[in-house]
Length: 93
Image (cartoon, rainbow, N blue to C red):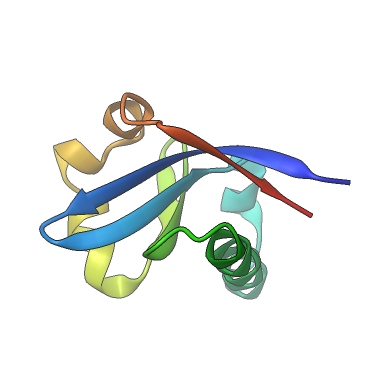
């Protein structure tokens, strides 16, 4: 069964980022479960030939590589602003 995610495939300061909009329940998962979800989505994005690292976002939170935390903590990296930049769907098994 495939799950389809809305994504914003963006380039911020020369860095490709695949912003994946995920279910808010991920916020309540352990760090290990969040890391596993990110790894699975990264493989899925690579299979879809999308360049960049995945970052997962939900209302009020995010999971991203540490070097991208400043962006996701900024006004431009807010959930509401990122929603305006949704430009693709990503389907994963």
